[in-house]
Amino acid sequence: MSENSSVVRLLNDDLTGEIEAILVYMQAHFLMEEQHCPTSLTMLEVALDEMRHVQWLAEKIVDLGGDPELTPRKLRFAGKDLKTALQRGVFLEQEAIGQYNEHIAAIAEPEVQRMLAHIRDEEKDHLDEFKELLEELEEAEADRKPTVGDLTDAGQDETAER
Ligand SMILES: [Fe+2]
Ligand SMILES: [Fe+2]
Image (cartoon, rainbow, N blue to C red; front, side, top):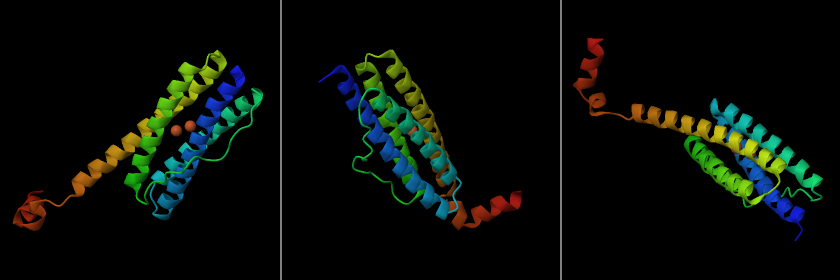
């Protein structure tokens, strides 16, 4: 296998991961939009970032004489609720960061390494964003849990004190 074809193979592997992320985030975008959830916009913005990554990777693959593979790997969609969508996002971004790090180490060409490092850094931003939203959601869930006070006079007393 020539030097170029082994690089093309790795970049195509990255490309299929990006395609999966786009489809998963677009599905989450539509589902969240239906539920009037503001996170639908975040999902769309992240999917658009992944589309730029697809463009950079595909251009590099063509430069190296390869064919971009646009068939997604087996899709792992999230559930229909915001929490599982964010958890899926965290998983996919962590997986992508790990894979980009491996490929940066495996590829000798500085230009390709720089491109992959740039993409990896954007995946880190996505990861931070998803984690932050997940934490906010979990905090809101914890606040919403009924307490004993909600069901007894203690809850009413608390209101009366204000
Ligand atoms: Fe990406
Ligand atoms: Fe990402």
